[in-house]
Length: 272
Image (cartoon, rainbow, N blue to C red; front, side, top):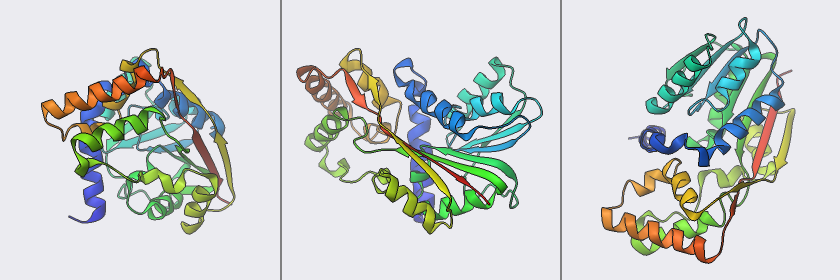
């Protein structure tokens, strides 16, 4: 299996599993940052938008609302269960101007210059070659159109993230990660460099510091179960899973953790 196919399979399995917790209220940041991305993009009525790595619609649904009945949004994701969640929400909101696809953002098949805006929120780092992915997304942007890439800043979910991986290392050292795929672009300069390698220039980048509240340690566990951590948790047996859970939550309780870091970087490039 080539690296891209392997990454696709892993992402689809992880987020299909995480779908049962993905839209839990404790994970409201997915939609908060999706809406913020669309606000910064300043979409206009009638525009045509492609939203890739859509999840359950955090950015695609606000985009559909912004472009109105004369506009159109295509929302794609590898995880069919997340697309099902997004589709149900679109129907509940009466959004008839949005199409959903379970598909790979590198193989969508749209011609050059097909969209006024292309959006990717917390998804560009799932492919082994981020510059290749950015180049493909940029190809589909019309002259005068915009590409929006939103990614995580430094110290994602700390201090809970460190507690999680410490507990994994004790139970299953083979699953411990030393590097997150988004680390390369977790600072503005790294993100700008990745986009430049893709031929994407004239980029407005904004780094925002943020935190997400935890009412109790158990909130963190629900977030872990509804995010990329689920891929690691799915590989644990019942005993190891419970050990990781107890160790993780005990650390947060002892440290009296009431919030986690959710720093975000927004990049918007305009095609001249």
